[in-house]
Image (tube, rainbow, N blue to C red):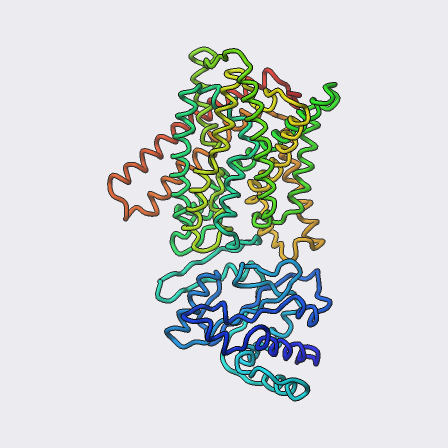
Length: 607
């Protein structure tokens, strides 16, 4: 039974639904041919402050969906659901979807413009009255007031016409099965504790661009151009761009293969190959992401040391100390940002930070290059050593463009996921690569074969400018690490059933323990072996090559086998064989480099 207060709230909501901006009939007239937006009552913050003056802050926020005469409909994605309901209205005479827009303390739009979060108190009336609320909203006439209106509205609650009120948490809502009539679409999503299907393609493009223009770009002049020279470096980067775009599009097109949305790389591999491939892919991916994140911590530590050396070159604070401080900053950020979609404004911050260190590096490199005498661009070393350095640099080329977590990033994009992801990829591999090209080529032009593996160590200029660029590199590395660590965080959060508000005490404690522990281990390994170029080569060899090129081509071949021509099948097999050989060769070269550096530098080296 509802309390008197809950009944009054229910009645008030019904009344507001009909009086809030326009009359019900006017909204229907304006809706036109299948447009639902004009049919949606909107509740202002002022109204909700009056109805719920003290909403609970600590409870999990819930999305509530009210669908009329639609018991055979399932819920998954706003756009598919809207299409479903519009079809029903046009062809089958069903009533419309009512969306209750309620203020909910910072989470007012779970699915932008379509569904919303309801706090705990706001769902009481819908849960208690789930057999008649929507009907009352539609059938109660506008106007009236006072006690008579109140009694009439309360009486309307007893009406019972068939419709569905579904209340669930965010994960359950997003992971339900969907069927859209007429389009033969049936997409299923596995369980996850993180938010999915909520980001625009443009936001996803910025996630990808953040990765490609991370502080790693400050190392490509020394780790790619120096071993390959002008011809090999330029041609190699351009080829790597085209090949990487192609390989990423193959993976993106398989995102909904087999009627199931594959929100993790291992899920896609497991669906196509089976359980063993699931575990193998999982291992490769997490080794890949772990080494990338170690590289980010080394980068941040190196940048922090560079700032220190600018003002006090007394060797009191060494690189391992700076790496430890960088790891602590990364841990604090990881604890505060619950999932990938929550970055939002931080992506804009990351873009600004990237522009700062890229512009500074370019301007100071040009200034040094104009003043400097002729540079030496020869590839150093014997023929035998050149073979290994060139092979290792090839691994760095593919490392520059690939994340090894494309399905996890694609999981955050709104429907249609394949089309929107393709837009994001085209943005990444056109506009997104230009800053990286500029800083890589100009840095090598300015300093030749003496270019440092961290470009800001080679440039000359005002101390404050170099300090600003290094601080920007530190902070951007922290944001980038969070992107590449998000699959690990998603696994831990889902595995241990983390639900509720991100700032709930139990969730904060879990993130401190789980994410803090992960970053602590990463920081320890980074301080132990702080050889950035070697990390990039080994990562590209043992995981980026297999994940991005070998697996992508073979998965596409296996998934689309019946639709491919013999020539297309041969093409994919050639890619598989070629990149397998490249992976083996690059791994040998990277291990050789690490062995050589280990002789020259002890563990916890102060480079």
